[in-house]
Length: 227
Image (cartoon, rainbow, N blue to C red; front, top):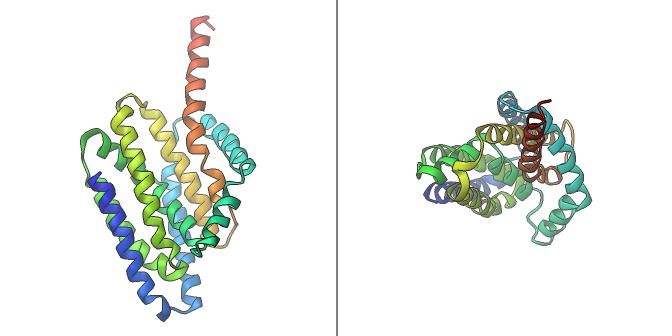
């Protein structure tokens, strides 16, 4: 958990610094910062998506996951909750940016399986820098995203600690690629190119392992019948 705790502290520190300088940044500067973050996020997502192992599994999971998220009104409910806390969209966008990515998945896997915190330390430094500018542009919601980092990465590290050695490598690859697709949606949203309800897409990360398991069972059945 040391890597996750370091990452959480880095986001909290960076956000605090960003909030202190927020008053000195014009609205035009804030828009420019978000656009740059959006373009950079898109660039990261392209690299992550290129390593997809089973495109059909990811595609099916995206459809089911997005429909499920929309049916459950996840975005609307979380938006209403954050509005009551007066932390705006910064919490949602920063949480997705900090929690959905290749470094998050692989870093938590290393932390859970071998207590190797190297990648999460690197991610923490990157998030420290990112949170300064995000908090300056999006407000105090980014500071609260540190809690999201703690809960999500802590849970993921514990999951890998518990059952990580039994998770197939191709599933981890596809989870990373799916994270890339979610980051692409976030990048387009931050750049004001296309608006996405990112939270409604998150169930995809839960659906994908199920689709992956069913796909493998079907292949085993077909092979068993000699087809």
